[in-house]
Length: 169
Image (cartoon, rainbow, N blue to C red):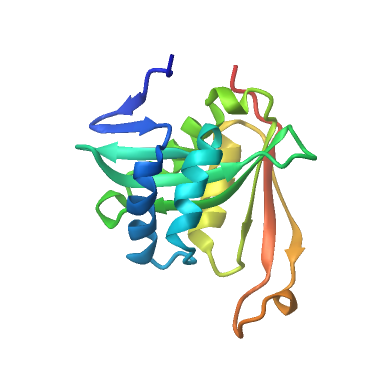
């Protein structure tokens, strides 16, 4: 039996289905987020649904988080991408998506939330620092992928933001 959806106002936080993949891809293509193929979002909805969340309002995807638990680190959920529709910006939706994620059954052994963030992405940096404050824990930042690893010109380095330990129970 599927867990009851979490609802905040008119927005529901749900486990994604493969039918949500195209809407997630479209949301990314309408934003400044790094673009991936539509296949990536469909695949995440199929194979990583337990660690992904979609936010829907009136049955429309208005936000999402794609994440996975690295096989070698079962106590970590790694956030790949968070997307928020322009109509929802400034409403705390990204924070609500992260809280819905760590409350998922698939994250019951998770003690840390990690993500990579570029130095210029101040909004994401603030999001993960805010997450740490909400769980009354730390947010450690360390080097991850240097800009020299990326084949395209102009890609910034990626820093790891590690929030935790978190307690959700």
